[in-house]
Image 1 (cartoon, rainbow, N blue to C red):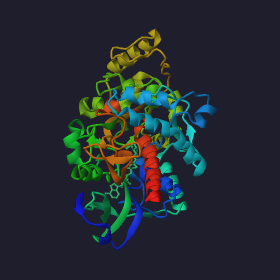
Image 2 (image 1 turned 180 degrees about the vertical axis):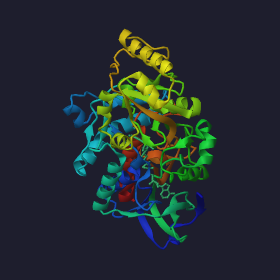
Image 3 (image 1 turned 60 degrees about the horizontal axis):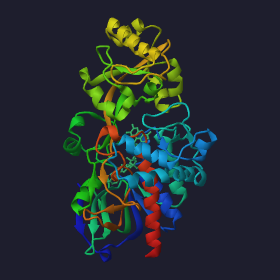
Length: 468
Ligand SMILES: Cc1cc2nc3c(=O)[nH]c(=O)nc-3n(C[C@H](O)[C@H](O)[C@H](O)COP(=O)(O)OP(=O)(O)OC[C@H]3O[C@@H](n4cnc5c(N)ncnc54)[C@H](O)[C@@H]3O)c2cc1C
């Protein structure tokens, strides 16, 4: 339940300068920034027993432009190029000013995390993500979101912030002057606690775990596997609606067309961008996979049984092994290997003749350097070499991208265009930069707005509290 009730600051026994709801990448980054901005007491409330969120499920790759990591790798990039890529992928739907703001904040945010909190980021140099004109994905050594959230949590604890787990926030309180005055949360034993807050940052992600909201806003994925964090129940959206906040692009989301099934492990899209493809249970390709993994979720789900096979080769598998997910997938025998197309068809139980024709046509399009019948440009795609690899996959909903519209300081906006004085949103709680469609999601838009808006919200809250 997400409720709004009335209460004045004087009605709370305990007052905290800054409360943050949610201990994922957005909330933890916001806490670090707020502490650095001089906020004496920062409290994060987290519904789980341990901070994890969708952040822990992710590959932990944060896109950032113009970093020293890119410079060291000889990659020339700028925030302007990054913002242009965001806008192109999202069909010019997002607020251009927000796209520019987060693109400009991305490089400094990754460098700040690396230098100030000793987080050993490096840039992914050996493959590109669809829609990015430069290689700008930055990750930690394991290339896993678990490492990202663990390191952020450690930094937050070292910085002296409190994380109160097992605390599900259900009610926000608002005073007569329309400022947020506090909140209440439920403990696992059913006990309820109230807390006054001078400032509040919503970092509780979107509504991917709320089936009713998904059915309402993303009906095409209402029956799809939800691969994000179950605790993301959409309170930010529901509180925002009740408060008269401006909400936008609620149908926007990140899907993924390559979740190993039934293993339930993410298969990196490097399998496709490096020259692989997907076939259905009939052994036929069915789409231009290179458009992006997000829009591919719906394409895969349209196939018989909602199943596809991602086919690649040993060279590509070598690139994929930098990801913990891929190593785990191999460990549970989720990657099939075969020396010939016939052997692969037999192992995958696909019609051998059709699969052979499909892969021959795919390789032929590479050899002739043209577009395939689906419009995929295969001119620069390396040819697949034996041994071939394949993974049985399905399409899934990863997270939602619409939400609370924020200004340049990550303050939540009202429908009338004014900002709430002391209410901020970051990460999946805020409307991101992907527009209203799955195809608008540029790889990394999720952690981009978690890390940048989290930092911006923490700094802005700190400035305002200091000035108050
Ligand atoms: C499998 C997968 C792979 C992904 N890979 C990438 C990637 O490589 N790069 C990228 O940019 N993005 C990726 N994403 C998206 C990315 O994970 C999210 O966009 C990002 O983690 C959002 O961060 P967040 O802090 O907003 O939310 P979360 O990390 O989900 O944190 C929100 C926290 O709020 C808590 N919470 C929710 N409601 C309440 C409440 N009422 N009271 C208290 N606590 C509450 C939740 O328990 C959770 O811990 C991926 C997503 C998935 C699912």
